[in-house]
Length: 135
Image 1 (cartoon, rainbow, N blue to C red):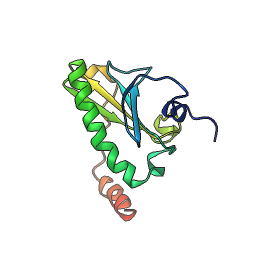
Image 2: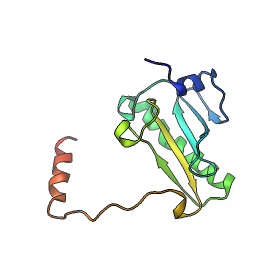
Image 3: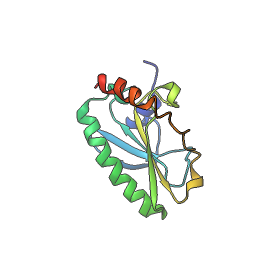
Image 4: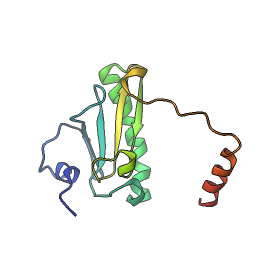
């Protein structure tokens, strides 16, 4: 594996502005923030995507993200937030180390997400069946 920037940050070899750390995670400020207070929750151990992370780590990640999001909203005066995790290059993942973006929001225009197109309701049940079959 080539050098992973998030592993380097987690091991203290690259500086970061840390918000939180424990044995499993570090949370630090994103240096290319979408909004003020944008943080990254990163696993200390390397997992390329969420699919590679053990369930025990995943079970700890969401409560931690909730706690950080609450603190970030209070810290920057936001009243809502986004939790985002891109998994795989086609999804927009730029660093091949699983992480969660915690993005405090003050208004809808801060994040350039647009609603999807209306679903074809004649096809939607078949898509749901295809997903259920694989659970």
